[in-house]
Length: 128
Image: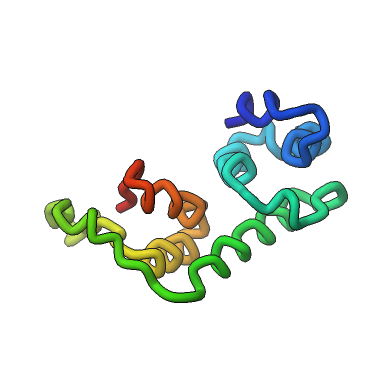
């Protein structure tokens, strides 16, 4: 995703942010979150020029959470996909079949799962 952002037009806020805070994004732990920058549709609504990376990620995540705070949407096209088997430790991979469930898991795990909702809605991704 870093290469994708660097191909954005010269003045694109995501590109400018990535370059300005390259030390932060060069860290292997932080680089895992760069998907959130690439996938965010927030760039026209926020002033990211001066935001530190942690603050920007917080704003992006809050916006994703707000997106699902309205009516829940059930993804019926996922109903035919079975959840994974329960392993010896009692763990099971479960298909996330609604917007609200994706948002809950993303918040609990503090990851970017909520940014993939559009892909799930367009039948391009399955999250579990």
